[in-house]
Amino acid sequence: MARVALDEPNLTSDTASFISSDTGGGLLEDVWGWLKDLDYGTVPAWLTGFSLLLAFQIFLRDRRSADRSQVDQIGVWLKLEYERVAPEGARVENGKFTRFVRNGSALPVEIVQIAFDIHTRWMVRDLAQWRDELPVWDVKPGTGVVQMYSGRVRVAPEETWDSGPQEVNFAHLAPEHADQLDLIEGLSYEIRWVLMVDNAGRRWEMRPMVGGAARRIRWWSRRRHDYPVEWKNKVTYGLAVQYHKLRGGMQALIQKATSKGS
Image 1 (tube, rainbow, N blue to C red):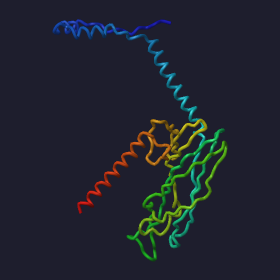
Image 2: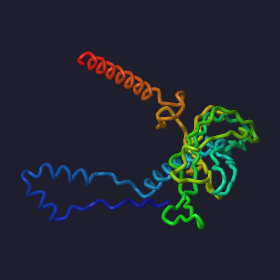
Image 3: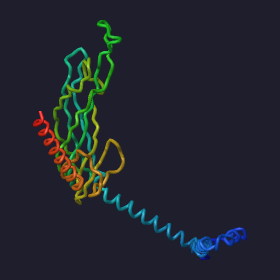
Image 4: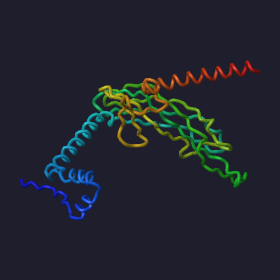
């Protein structure tokens, strides 16, 4: 195979005169000499280097895919139920939710936590257009969400686990002048994250409502503030505990000093 060398820079007469006109020409001559003598390599050498980098990148991608092969087959979802009543009827303030976990892999998986929010939508009186003979309602979201966290569950291979129906009250989320839950989408949910441990003991965070691949949780990974205690970073969690202890002690001392002064 023919080897094609990259052209080296040539010292032009203008550049040479510029260097020689410098005071002693020492620094510029040294720099220019270094650039002239620099080995720019050959085209095959550059191609070999790029090939190695590409092969390493492919290896890392395949390794991550292999590590994620089990958690990619885990599905988590909810089923919400509530009674649909006309706005003139008694207001519905309770519903039911059921959690489902599908393990499509050939190995067991442990679900550590499912963090999810339940949202509400209400039929609210439109007072600007309201008439007793012709009532008008506007659909508005609730004043907040119901945040919930599930406990641990182990799901066998090729099985679907469900929690069974569980009741939830959302009366405190009704806006002012709300008569009833929306008849079409009165309840909805958002899974914020799912924490799981695969059969090899690796920890993962999955966010099915956002999309994308599951995130491997390592010792240096960023944790969320409402993760379970055993999943928090031990260093930052310890610092946070000491900070709150110190802050509580300072507040107690200030309160004590204030009470003495009064």
